[in-house]
Structure formats: C-alpha cells, structure tokens
Length: 303
Image 1 (cartoon, rainbow, N blue to C red):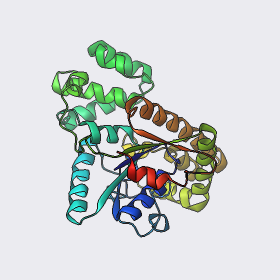
Image 2 (tube, helix red, strand yellow):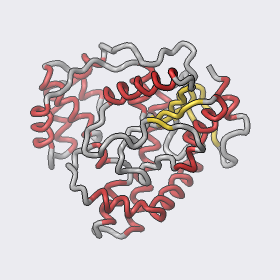
Image 3 (cartoon, rainbow, N blue to C red):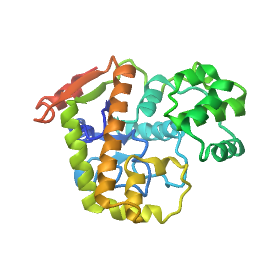
C-alpha cells in the first residue's frame, strides 16, 4: 500500500492506523525525513506518533550525503524484503512525488554523474541566476529545457550535468525506464486531498509548533555542521529560514512566517504533481473534521 499527500495532510497518522489494522510496518517515502540531523524541522514522526508501529527509512542518512532516488529505491527494496520476510504488510507513506513515481512507475536508467563533472557544474552555477542557468540548458538541450521551469535550478543543474557526463539528453534517459519496484496490479494507492484553506491552517500551526518545540535549536545545531550549501538537506523546507534565525540574521518570527509561506508553496507543487501524475489513484478528502471515520477501511479496501 502507498499513501501520498501534501505536507501536513495527516498521511503519517493514517499510515500508522492502517499499519496497526494490518499488522504492518510504515516505510518512509519522504526525501527529507531520511536525514538523521533533521527530525523536528522535517516533521519526522515522534515515538508517540509512531504508536508502537515499526517505522523504516527514517533518519538513517547523514545530512552530509547526497541521497538520490536510486539509493531510495535500493533502500526501499531492502525494507520491503525485510517486511515480507517478517510477515508484515508494508505501508509506504510520503509526499515526495519523484520518489513515489519512481517506486510505482520505474526509474530511468541514468548513469551516475562523475563527481568531478558534478562539482564543476555546482561551481559554475554558484551565484548564477536561475534564468541564466536555464538558458545554458536551452542552448545544449532544448528538449529538456522545455520540460523544466527556469525557477527550478536544481533540476536544471541536474539536466546539465547529465548532458555533459553522458552526451545525451536527460529526456532520452527518462524514456528508458527500468521496471518499477512495485507493480501496479493489486497495489493499493491513495492520495489525501485536504481542502486548501484547511491545509494552510495546518501548515501554519505545525510550523509554529516546530519552532516552539525544538526547531530553532535543531537549526542552530544543523548550521554548526558547516555543510555544503548545495546539499539536498540544506534545502529542506523551512531549514534555510530557521538557520538564518538561529544565527541571528533575521528575527525568529520573521523566519517562521517565511517558512510557512515556503511550505504552502511546496504543498501546492505537491498537489499539482499528485493531480497530474497520480490521476488514477484513489483520492480521500480531508475536511475540518479530519479524515472521515471510514478512512482506514477505505485505505485497506482500495485496490
């Protein structure tokens, strides 16, 4: 079973309830909750929220590492095999659309980019405007440039790295997909669909709670690590803002408000991905009253 949904939609709580009902294990498919040093600011489930249910692939990666989709699939394969060997039903939950798409539709067979090529492009891109970076891509790979927004510099940079390292467009590699780890036949797939106003309120309340319950301290400790600004963990939603507050660059309340805005924008991008990529998945509405009482039954029954 796979449960997707935007941040703060309640998907983790549903996953625990379903896993409890099925005698299962919750397996993470969120790209930021994998990092060991980021617990509060990524809303990683607490011991109480886990409800005694086993959880896998949470906090198992140092933030100094570049966790990739390919590594996620390898880790997921191991977690699924362990769950099945133990007779547990895996309940996969997350909001990272790219991870979920790769898991259910397969991953394109892009060769690893040599570190010297990646490092050279990160150096060249440092300080470059996003529009200029996109123009560089358009000059060498117009097909891929047409698929990526100029405001998405990380994916643009990735496309440039792949083009230089392989001599082929990332679009060509994406057309050659490996078989998915989870076959569609019989796979239960669910997307939580909260009302927009409700989701905005939940995001604001949750981030304010994060800041009050250790988020600032976590950001301060994280900033002290002195990690490369280009690492994925450094771009976790809310982390740059709270690091700025922790180091005294901006006021805490200003950081919280900026992080709430950033989180809402991220949630909109998630919702767009789910509507476009997961159109055939069963959608479960979430209202002010929360999930409907029959949510667990629907999740268990959906095919």
